[in-house]
Length: 100
Image (cartoon, one colour):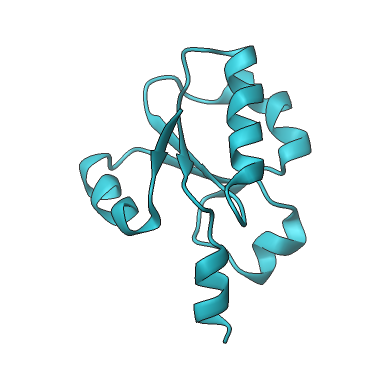
């Protein structure tokens, strides 16, 4: 499974201007704090697998990186041509530094 660190994400975004960012946390978590992207909770993400683009990389994130790994595994079962990347470690460290 391909992974990217948060520190490498901005350089990745510059090199891939059409990439997609998906937050697989619950809506209340996304509203509290997020790094952008579309909010599609883990329980709903498989249902939209057929709508996701296969021609651009898709970075998935959550709090610790666990739900996004699960989402990637489930999405690949539905469509193995998706270019999915996990945000390694999630955004937990950002939550603590931003809201400290």
